[in-house]
Image (cartoon, rainbow, N blue to C red; front, top):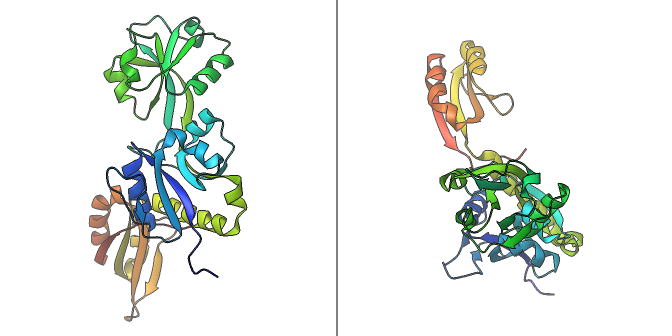
Length: 294
């Protein structure tokens, strides 16, 4: 019997999500290294083989079994009509935690104000299937063309409207476009094919990855505060101290003193620490967090 561990072949998104995905995996405990030209990064987990692929094509390769699993947007699963198992949702994007949106956008000067006004128009998009479903929903016939990129600059000279992915809307506004409608909101998904999900070893590995990644996301922008407080000041401290649940109190060797621990939002710490100090807290320590597992 071979001592070589079974490997899960996992696809990670190449491109705009690459850096944030590698950082998320680092916080989850998986250290991945890749050169700029390599599509097969190294990972310190012997049970994982990593492949870098564009998110747009990830779900197809997962569905076909060329990858056991992968990270991609829900939007690309919809676009590719992929039959895959969605292990979990991971709420992160290139710039934040909010979902990205596929929107219909038109030039500021356009006389298009509703879906019905797209009748007979020319639309550019990278997500032809998503755009077509939107038009079908509204009973509109229009000419949809695939865009290879730089879609925002094509209106109004080359097309009447675009269907484009946006996280903040800044790029659309910079190109003098206004959003007509939101078609679809999307978060990143950890997906696998049905064969991998039925494999006990691979399923256990996917559940481990899901738990750790979500734990890393839960810890974002949070810190652990530790402090000491005597008996008489405990009520005042616990009233001030926000916490994920109730603060944790432990007795110290001196019978009238306690150690207090609480997970709090990092944004409140600069105002919170002076209040804790004024209420009698001593030995205040702020610690960064990588993961919070419920």
